[in-house]
Image (cartoon, rainbow, N blue to C red; front, side, top):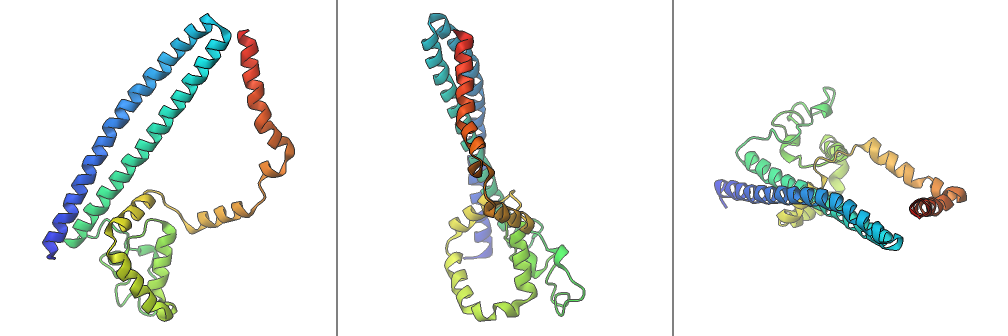
Length: 234
């Protein structure tokens, strides 16, 4: 497949996802309007329901709350989908630009440049139009750190070259999977210190699980709130 054909395919894919992103924007607009109407309408409906009776009002109030929470969930799902489609559009557009020789969308890894390194400066390992920028499709800061480490000290990977080549051959034929994987990680920077902090937090014993008083309050406080609301209306 010629380079121009590949570039045109990327541009078409980018345009397709841009259209899908615009469609999600329209859906979000309608959901915003529906959410506002459901909130105001729910308040009015609940007020009339309490006019009829306490239990009728409580049932209607519960239904209104559930419906409003469902609307919030729906809005959140479509908002995430809109961002996902936007990411896919950007990925395909960046690849089309890369085929034309424009690698500006990808980090060149200037922060990894080391003047004292044995060969990195001689082979343009990092920086503008560098090998790192040509290969870099990482989505997180930690991923960039790992890629920079591989390129800076390739001898450490010598025993795994065959296995890595086979893996690359397999992934190379799965463009859709690669792009979706990247799209999920875009605009969510994750640095190594953040990952370490998360792992440390997961290893710690949860305060909520270890404290019986706090654990009980999780169930008691909502019950007290509901009862107080009932007594206030009665």
